[in-house]
Length: 100
Length: 376
Image (cartoon, rainbow over all chains, first blue to last red; front, side, top):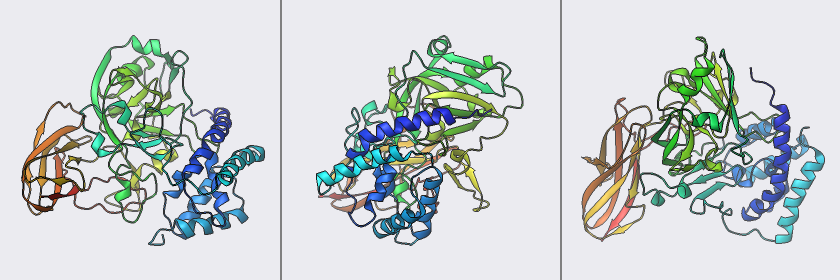
């Protein structure tokens, strides 16, 4: 019943890259994120969504790790070695005070 | 990997390059969205734009201050090329174009839409998702056709108990879940549930789901799917991510289980006076909006002493079954600092609470709204 959406999704994704080229730099420019090691990795998120979506979240180690795993499952280009660095960055700046 | 390396390098390289060229990041919020300059940009992509309470002064929320909540964005759609499929558990699948819909009886109704996550930012600790404050809510005049009239010629089978909406918005990668929401058949067939083609007397704008979107009154905003592509009659509730994971809350009888959100909560907001207002002593109008999903409003109470005592307010002005209602209270303000509060109740026996248990995704925030004011 739910026919495959792969073809339209790929088309939409291609369009998304094009949109990303136009919007991501402006979005990133306007979003002050600290320039500590790992910040460039956050720019990989802007392929799919603006930086604001990520940096308004607050999680502890498990929360951020689970979130990154979910994003990787959805196709975020974050190999394991980069995931660790990105995790360190996110926990340094966007950690939930309760450590979830 | 589904994202091509070249595509990634282009996108991220462009972003990083510009950041470096610009030096220190600009200390300013995201650029406003054209036509939506008055809204707070919670995220530019996907577009998530929130109204300031002080701009929600009209019964019909003007388009320029009507909030936008997108899980994914959609490319603009040419109304002449648009069509929607009616399929699934039906004997007569259909493809309908805009002209086909316009031959059906048109209705206009006032419906308040509220994002399920409105107020999420007030949860402690911070809940996951867009950090809305009070302004992911608005009341529109929606013109369109009854979903029942659209479904009827498709002849739904008796086994069909749910109706799913799928829009032309698609996730940015093939692996990410499509945004699809379903509603029970009883709600789909309710005469207030429509496919809207107009908002506030104008063709439905793209950011609001044009050319056609679902309007499911009383349900959380996510049920009112935008940019309709397919309407699918199902035997069971749709089992996708946006039904079984997102837009869910813990069950009251078993917190380890979740249910897919349906009705909005009973809720009210204070528009005037605003937080931190400095008022002159004397008669002051306290006012705002109240709404209540599947219930009907039965009362609005106002407190000017931080909830120690409550006095009944008055509903006033236009309203309809699924719209918000304006409420007012005339306050004889005395000098000092005061906490003004509003508390709505409804026909389902619900009343706004003083607290809300934390839930991971930050839904159901309808805690009594309070504003502090100084009276001189």
